[in-house]
Length: 445
Image (cartoon, rainbow, N blue to C red; front, side):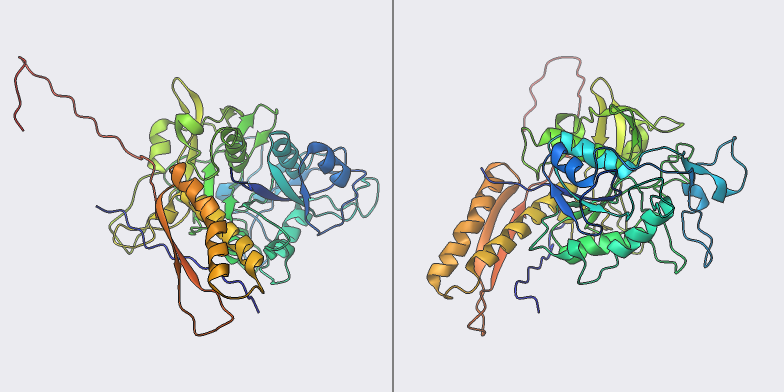
């Protein structure tokens, strides 16, 4: 039985130095010399620590790896739209090469580069064998996705659901995209990843689509018109990018790299978007056949519908903003929303991150007061611990205000309270009027 229960209710509408833990969960393969156990997530604070646990070099694919192609009830994989078929391929989508023999595990690259930028990661080893000369060498795409389904099966015994052991802010699938990947039971991997984030309640899932540069950027066949998973506990960035580490990396990596840069001078709950805090300096170019223009980027943020039968879902683009450079242009979660409903605040990623921070602090504070005498002294202690973070959020303009309210309980062993947050919102539109006059006149109000 859970004795610490923290829930949230978003009743907002679109109407008239504290320690921050930005820890990224990444599943991946381990390379030669790895000492970490399989299936046991390990926290890493430095590149040297990571290499000592997961190998000094990334695991490599022994043979070429094709994109897994989904055929209902017979094979798991991605739909045709997600697989980058080009003129050099046959029409057989199951034969499209993803990785060549000798290519490195993309999750290892993902993790190593985030560590080098100052983020903390939790890495989980997926392979049993690190010696690629062994007949049992199991570094394959098939092994990756089989293991990912196992990791995100939602079992209460899953290590990453243990908030007391693992403090996770962002859940990723590393270099193995989960959007649209479906197993033979018609279960989508993205829904399972999001379910884990929701079960934890204090983190967000970064959902990546495949690296298909030929895919339309809008309209039929595009990612924005695909079957996007809806959740306030998830977000999606697009597209994949050619990065300064000389790899093509998923958009979630670009977001986390940009976040790492922002954290040098900003709080973790501030918006990582726009030219002030969202410049994606890690990006050399977007990996798309067509230019993802500012107009297209704006179309991914198309606002909120009044049609409750057709709520909107937004994704966040990486686009070139003249004269600043490549920029994250969007701050939305995958939450569906209509203007007639509540839940407005958590359509914004920075506020999702802010609430995650509050819930983490509430969990830590609840552990601090557990088994203490349930009196006014304990309530004062609880309030003081929470106020440390909440006051920081107010002073840093993350919140307008907050309230800590003690709620009466008939259970003498229970401390029950409500934390009321009054969020601030970032500007998402600007309306400037320019008036031309023949002569200077006095306008009386």
